[in-house]
Length: 216
Image 1 (tube, rainbow, N blue to C red):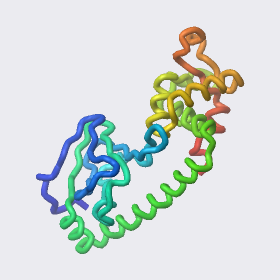
Image 2 (image 1 turned 90 degrees about the vertical axis):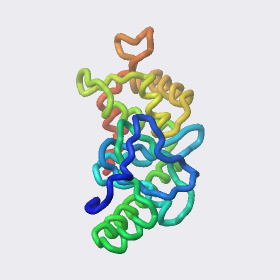
Image 3 (image 1 turned 45 degrees about the vertical axis):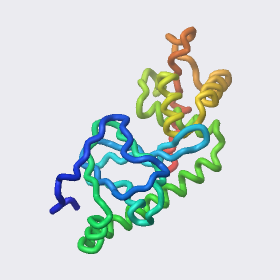
């Protein structure tokens, strides 16, 4: 897809750096060369990640060139990231001259529409408590420490920050829900955190029940 393209439009972003912001006008799309990018949208009292771009040659930001409307999401580099910036005329030339690229654009847009519909439905239909439970399970799977019998220990502060950043749930709501889970003995404090309350243990059954991947 990148054959024959110049390298003067290669841009580098550091971890946490914003590539573009939701609501602003855009005149370029981006093709990932290395690194990873989170695409986020604003929700009530926070943001939610709708897509993580982490595969080389994957592209993002193309909607600003297709419909000329403001950016529908914010793009943030997850680590040091290199991208190739493509302006409108170059993008149009790629569509007209490269059938494989045009087909890929169509497939990607179709997939994103389907995924966005699923995510919107999830945000609307899922109760905050269920979203938090799913967020805890996701965080445990990706960032937790497996300890025994399939249970996973997680940092409560890190989990709260992750759920807030990825699902847009307010921090106070996350904390109160976690305490409710503990009171119900659905999850528990780690043995070393009975007083400090730094780590929580999620039983294997809790993770299995709330793992969204098991629904597919």
